[in-house]
Length: 404
View 1 (tube, rainbow, N blue to C red):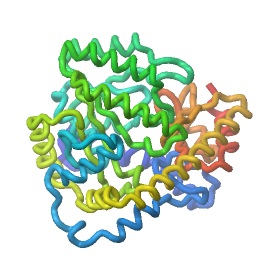
View 2: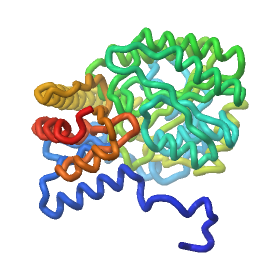
View 3: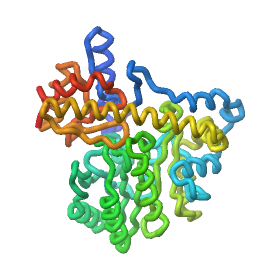
């Protein structure tokens, strides 16, 4: 161990757990084994190849040297920020306080630096995307959870109210990361009634101290229910426009544009134009990564000016949403045939299968050549990489080793 490392930086795994599982699956596949790899977090086609949206690549190839090489403004190109916000809320005429970030993870990290003090606690749902905990830890903060609704059940408002109240009492402020709609890892979204209940809780809490709701919009372009996604965005816009709760969004080009490696995204608070908030975000950018890549911002601006390109992108999103829906349906049918609980996917790249002991189930599944990601609440299954023909094999393996 390098002596120069401080003691608190010496006990980490060699790789991110999800990437390590994927690497193990690929190594066994390369060695000739028949592997079902459901750990992948990127969209693959039915032949197992990475999906790259052609409408995006057409415009990417047209970028000029001056759209790629110069520094972008520290907080990002204002026109880019406005265009990205308008992808979600077309009627807004400004981005509000906003900054460009290296993907959605950058937006999440910046929210921690600006809305909580070191040692305080972030709130999110259980289950959640594992790196949420890493982001909190790396910023010297803790993470608490409140339960995501189970299939067919409403939001547990009593537990949410108690958790929110306890945090407000302890630290005088709330930062809530909410991955809705198209939640990772369950693949389900809050209902209109759930959103209304949560909004009421946050409004009431805002009388006791500052409340920030940050919406994580990683997956909402891929859904079998586009009307429900639009309704959710409308509800969150109404809450933001009231001004009692600070509502913002973490927006990423990674999944939406299949530009995982470009690291383009933004943190925006569209209903808040406070110069002090904008200055704080800009300062955080300067002290963290300084400037984000210009190319993804230039690409977004090309889309904003090209209605035909937007239509092609929307068509590709519809196509791959249908592919994901077909995979979800095939998986539910296979699970039902094995007498297991179905998963009711609504959107995003993942579903979560129940398991009595997820870590043990994950290890036993690996012995069957099936790779998943264990979470405290179950097994994350990547529909984005699980092909229709693989659903029966997955269901058989799950019944064998992980039935609750």
